[in-house]
Structure formats: C-alpha cells, structure tokens
Amino acid sequence: MNTAMPRKPKLKLPPINLGKESVGERIARLRGAKGYTQAELAEKIGIIQVLVSDYELGKLRIHAEMLARFAKTLGVSADELIGLKKMKANGQGLSRKVVRRMQQIEALSERHQRALLQTIDTYLKGAQA
Image 1 (tube, rainbow, N blue to C red):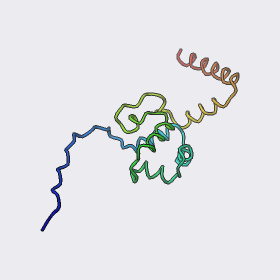
Image 2 (image 1 turned 120 degrees about the vertical axis):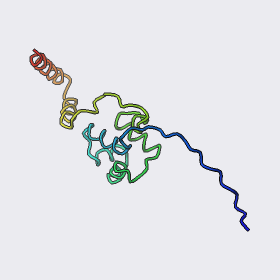
Image 3 (image 1 turned 90 degrees about the vertical axis):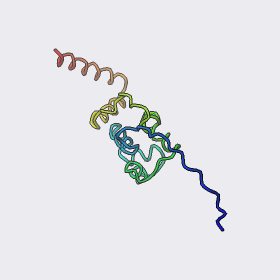
Image 4 (image 1 turned 90 degrees about the horizontal axis):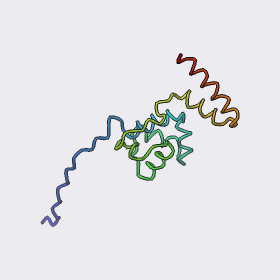
C-alpha cells in the first residue's frame, strides 16, 4: 500500500535573462580588469585561490555571502555581478597595465601625483592638436 503524499507540481517560472556571461566569467573579467590574480582576490575576500578558480569556472555555486564579498571587492553591485543590471562603465575595460600604473600613481605623494597629472594633461593636449 502506497501511503506517500502526492507531490505538488513545481512552479514553472519565466526565465530571467542574465546575459551571455556566467557569474564566474564576470568575476574572472572583473578580477582581470582590477589587475588581481586569483590568489590576490582570494586573499582580499578571505578564501583560498582554488575556490576563486572553482567559482570562475562554474564548478561551485556561489552563495549570497560570497557573492556580496566578490561584489564589494570588485567594486560592483551584486545585481551587476549576477547580470540583473548592466555594468557601469567605471573602468572595467582597462587593461592590466593601465590598472597597475594607476595603482602606482595612487601610491605617490600628492605633490608627485599633481606633477604627473600635469605632464599627462600637457601630453594629451598636444596629442589632440
């Protein structure tokens, strides 16, 4: 005699368009844009490098707390990271070389930063002429 309760059918929810990239692919792209290695990103969010790799490759599902840590460290919202919102144009397209140079400039004293920015401004004005 079968006494099992009949199961309710699962709700069929409409699909959500999360874009062409997976969450892991977005993490990898943003990590690269920030100039971080997997090990550097792992250290910043308090996990080991192999977990960053597994998240990026889609081997692990990312839970809410980890999603928040990645988003905060990478400078985007959780909605942007999972693809619900479009990414803001805040430097994600910069090359690693440019990001590293910017980090080096930020490490300079204010006086040296001003001098360097004046040099850059002068160069750019000449290049546009």
